Amino acid sequence: MGVSDGISRAARGKIDDVNPKRILVVGAGHVGLYAALRLSKKLSRREAEVIVVDPQPHMTYQPFLPEASAGNISPRHAVVPLRRELRKCTVVAGTVTRIDHDRKTAIVQPISGPTREIQYDHVVVAPGSVSRTLPIPGLHEQGIGFKTIGEAIFLRNHVLDRLDVAAATTDPEVRRRALTFCFVGGGYAGIEALAEMEDMARDALRYYPELEPKDMRWVLVEATQRVLPEVDRDMGAYTVQQLLKRDMDIRLDTRLESCVDGVVKLSDGDSFPADTIVWTAGVKPSPMLDATDFPRDERRRVTCLPTLQVVDGDRVIEGAWSAGDCAAVPDLTKEPGNFCSPSAQHAVRQAARMADNIANVVRGREPVDYKHKHAGSVASLGLHKGVAQVYGVKMTGWPAWFMHRTYHMSRIPSFNRKVRVVVDWSLAFFLKREVVALGQLHDPREEFVEASAPVGAAR
Image (tube, rainbow, N blue to C red; front, side):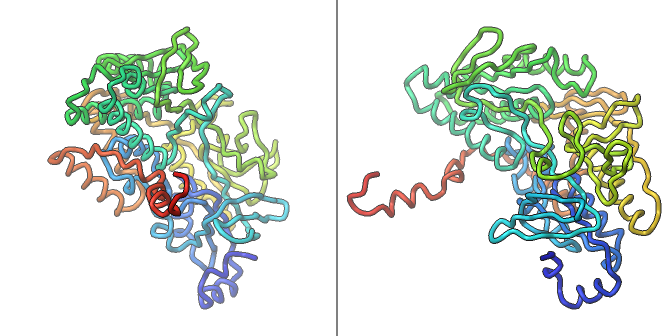
């Protein structure tokens, strides 16, 4: 059963009259949302029907996760509602469990109810990536990820809750453990999460007379000899220097060996207890790709041509397209054998080129190669602090922080979200940020379950 039954009868009658192409977009991240939005604008309903499948009702703008976690913007403003933004598309809330491209059919498991088949003419495979973890003892039980808005909200509440625990206890060991925060991974996600959370916690301490900044211990563990590999070494060194000035413990060329029961053991021989262990050590393609028959490279990415068409050796797989974190897209601005980095910068531009290429093919034209020289990178190191390297120009401090905010405000989809983010930032100039933990969000029924338990029942 196709999903076109979700369209009005009048609209479906018009579509059937001209036999429009059906374009299935798997995933609504940076690639999926931007591609679907552009396709819905470039192709009329008489030319194509665009269907988007994703288990979440929103797209998460991941560069804003650190700011949402730190309370600089509302978490709701870091996500884009799919149905509001993709009004010309059919949105299916569910998970693609199988793609059989030989039959051009996808099996979808809706969030409730039986599975359904969706047939298509073109498929955009863009499920994105998930956290790349290692078989480290204790990581599964103790680690916190930082890729979703839920994880960002949880981390914020958890850090503030640890401040409450430390302020309330008289046990120095409990306090030391509660105020030790360990971040694993020195890429952009790890550095920004570490810097923003430390900035928020330090700001919150003004309301905790029992605690001092020196009581907190912030640890960064990075397996290589540098942080922020996307920028030059001197910019990475500057970042480390700025973090050290804030009394952070930076461990380069060091690996996490174990964190069983919250006891962090490092490859340099050091060990310490920590209630907070955040894992930001890279990503890998979504495991959803294992349920497809598309060719993959050694890193399990879908192999693509510069046109964003899926390719198996020298054979182009007609009607199959991919881009973003889950795709191996040749970088034509570098030597042969190089691929585009898994960044939002490439994902957004690849989505636009892919949508244009699909429109070209639908209209009988040839697709065009994707080619974009990486413009550079920007990162926030907390409020009014940052580092940037754009088109060879290097900036630090307030100018870099301002560029970081300006760039990402311009890239987040929809005028609605741009305005809301700017309002959040503007209010922050006059009002102090909220530093209250809403931990009950993570288990909202606990109090009711206890209150409604039968009389005499064990509690």
